[in-house]
Length: 148
Length: 148
DNA sequence: TATATTTGAAAGTCAAAGAAAGTCAAAGAT
DNA sequence: ATCTTTGACTTTCTTTGACTTTCAAATATA
Image 1 (cartoon, each protein chain N blue to C red):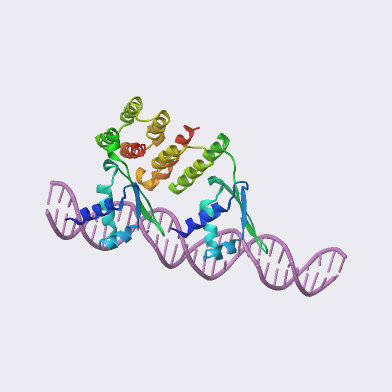
Image 2: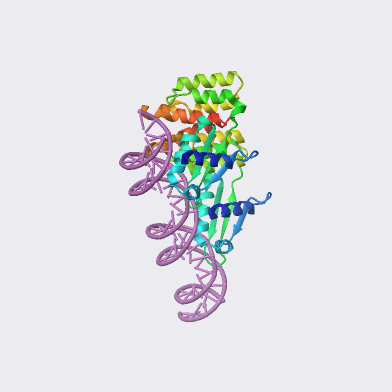
C-alpha cells in the first residue's frame, strides 16, 4: 500500500459523521507517518481538491494548521458544478477521484460508477496522448449528464 | 511448456474460489519467473483480455501494481458470445443494434443501455476515423464485460 | 503605552530522484 | 508464418529535501 494512500485514508477517517471539517498540523501528521511534511501537501493536492468535493484552508506561522472541509451537497447543482469545472484535460486519476466522490455522496450508484470507470479508463481507451484526455472528458461529461 | 503458459497458469491459480480479482506487482512476478517484466504484459494481453472474460487495471509509479478481474463466463454465455463476435471495427450503428438487442432481451437495464449508447456515440468520441471504431470496440466490450 | 522589529514556528513550492508499469520492435523458437 | 522472448526507452506516479513565505508572539524602541 502506498504511503500516499494510507495518509489519504487516515485523513478521510478523521471525518466523523456529524462534523464536516477536520483540522490538523502538517508537521504533526508528517511525524506520525514518518515522512517529510511536503508529502502531506502531495496527498492534499492530489486527493482533497475542490473538484473532488473538498475545500482546504491553512494557516502558516506559529500554531498554524490545515483545515479540510467536506463539501456537503447531494444534488444536481453539485453535479452541474463539477461538470462545469472539468477542464478539457481530465486525466484518468481525476476521473477516478470524481467517480469515487460522486459515489460516496450517493449521487450515482455502484454499477453506474463501475461503467464510468471502465469507459474512462486509459487502458480501455488506449489512445495517443493528444486525444486521450479530451475524449475521456467528453465521455465522462456526457455519461454524467445522462445520469442526472 | 512455454514460459508464457506457465505464467498464465500461475496467474490463474492466484484466483481463489471466493475472490474474483487478484493483484500483484509486475516486477515481482517477473523476478519470480526470472524473465523480463514485459513478458508479463505479453501474457496479460494475450490471455487475460475481455474475450477471455478478464478485465485488467494497473497503476504506475511507486507502489504500482496490476489488478485482474475475472468475470464468471459460464454465467453469461450470451454476453460472452457477443463480446467474441465483435470484430475490431464496431460502428456506431452496430453498437446501437447490439445495445437494443441486449435491452430487449432484458440482459441490460435501460439506464445501462443509455450509458452504453453515450459512451459509444460518434459525436461523444469525436475521433478521426482511424481510431473511432477501435476505441468504440474496446469501450463496448469492456463495459459489457463489467455488466455481468 | 504604542508601535516597530526580531525571532521561531509553522505551512508552501518546486524540482530532482526514485519506483513502478507500458510500449514497441527486433531477435529467437516452433 | 506465427507465437514468444528480450531489452532499450518512455510515461506515470510518489517520495524527498532544499529553499521560501507567512504569521504570531516576544522583544525592543520611541
